[in-house]
Length: 326
Image (cartoon, rainbow, N blue to C red; front, top):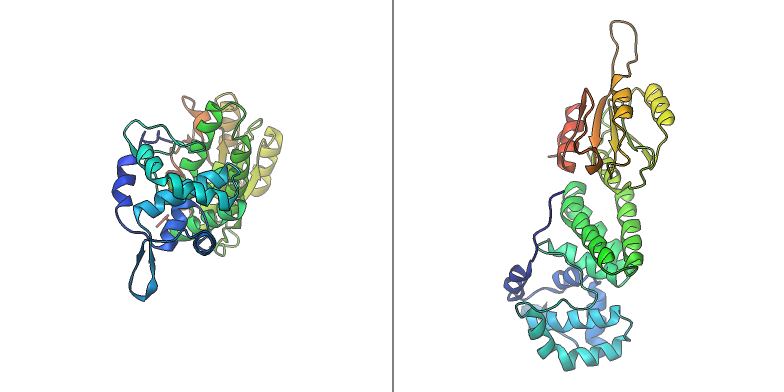
């Protein structure tokens, strides 16, 4: 994955000048639209504008006030008290938080220039608002599909949480665990289309022995399922003997080996799987071995390929079935 841009504040300031609908603001904040209506009804935090037909339109000041309230409630302040504080401080606080060089608000994640859905997802995760996290993820996958949702919504948020965790000692571990759990759940819940060929050889996906990071190959599994392609997911830390046995039993069209770190990548295992053959003499077959993950950087295996993005991996594997991402 490429590094994220350092700062998206200029884009945020430009976008803030356009009044938002309730749905758009809810996605931005990572809350449910009903929450915004409840806060308006209970605490008088409502939109400054009303379009024809009484449709709400939220201005940049409304957004700043609600962002302050979300930060306060995320830190444990009761909603009624958070509303009073937000109303009293939003003017000076909003101006200060948007000034060049200003520090980030407590609990904010270093997201940079990302899709608005990623910002809403991050806010919901920091609040440990599991229903909102689940809803944000389902909306992103439903709107963009697995590949875009993974690369442009889930990954930036996961990386931001990881950076916050690394710079904050033991803080935010719970945020990372909750977010990872719900990302995995959203990927597994993605309903695949019927397999294009019931008798077709599947793609086998597995982490190498000692590797526990499964989310990237869960995303690949979901993306292939979205195309209706047959897969078999084996998950984390699959022993070498079990991988070899599974390949012999299934006769897969492809084998995806995920390694997050160089310490877990095993080139000899990749070569062993790439050299496996089965079938009758004169018509023997062998799998296409895909080395996925940063752990394989600088290594290679004869006959294996190493895609650099989820899109590349999906295109590569789908091509064997005459399918494509689009």
